[in-house]
Amino acid sequence: MFRRTKSVVGLDLGHQAVKAVEISMEGSEPVITGFACAEIAPGADRAEAIAKVFQQGKFKSKTVVTSVSGQAVVVRYITMMQMTDAELRQAIRFESDKYLPFEADEVQIDCQRLMRKPHAPSEGAAAGGEQMSVVIAACKKSAVEERVQEIVRHGLSLLAVDVDVFALANAWELCGLSEVAGEAGGERAIALVDVGASVTSINVLCGGETCFSREIGIGGADMTQAIARRLGVEAAESEALKRDPQGREAEISRAITPVLEDMVSELTLSLDYVENREGLRVEEILLSGGGVLAPGTVSFLEQATGRTTRTWNPLEGLRVAESRVNVQEMEACAPSLAVAIGLASRVCAQ
Ligand SMILES: Nc1ncnc2c1ncn2[C@@H]1O[C@H](COP(=O)(O)OP(=O)(O)OP(=O)(O)O)[C@@H](O)[C@H]1O
Ligand SMILES: [Mg+2]
Image (tube, rainbow, N blue to C red; front, side, top):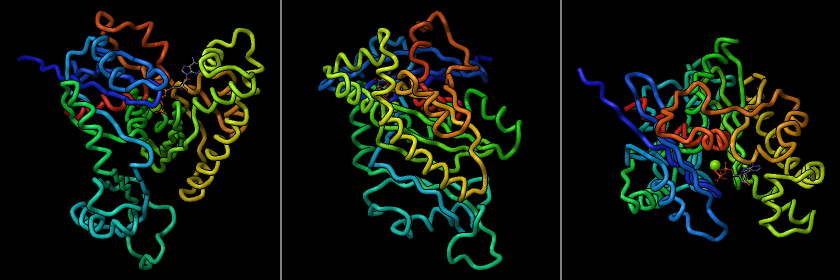
């Protein structure tokens, strides 16, 4: 008789900006019911930005999903013999040192079988045996604990700690865009690439399912540094020029070219690897993250990778409660919201 409204705040603790998006279930429809974003001033504490976000965003809920990324997280895609989920968990637990560069007791491990069958048999696999693809994610317990402390300190409760690269794929799925991609051809492969301030996250989806992910330690902050060096200006001016070039687009584009070249060489290494391993072609690159807003970035990536490249808006297809959200402000930073939306999408599974 009563429609229960459930809400979750996806909290993306980025290197340069804290982004929070609240999604509520209205019946079976996810609706954006809150948004706030706060930049972390150079040298400032991230806690201030988190506090600001929760003062500004008119969130209904104090239930948060956040994420971890960087060196504390390792994700591996492996081929194993067919087994049950229970057997898989046990195998990963006992053989974790085979796949992960961490001691088993210092990490939180999760694993899942993938729908997609392995393209090539695993090394040493018995001939003729059925194989399956598995993704393993491990995160240092100390990094998870750090996140928990960061959240509870603000009087919030933590529903889950996710991984940035998976949140990206969840945002993509929530927009309903994955279905369109799937319908166009079952095995269509695309790459979601989120260019943040310090990290660029890559997630390759095949038929809507993640088959590869990786993080590259290059992002918008490197572009800001390159502009500062080339134009001989301070970091703050360089950051301002990158956002509003004041007629100096060509100069700024040239300054960031070496950063984009490094990014492309890492990106194409990854795409070549996954194409070779999975026997497919990654047809399209979908860009998100604040870093893609720098002048000339999208066209450079398109030209240099030789693949159709465009920015995707993670708000596309989602209803927004306009009485609660400053839509104009949210649209202005839409590309940076992919991870936060992916994190909040957990509400659908509640
Ligand atoms: N309008 C703009 N034009 C150019 N660059 C921009 C613009 N807005 C933001 N950026 C850049 O985007 C980056 C921040 O994007 P984002 O919020 O996605 O990163 P983050 O999540 O904080 O970082 P990370 O993902 O590395 O932890 C910064 O490098 C910033 O300079
Ligand atoms: Mg980010």
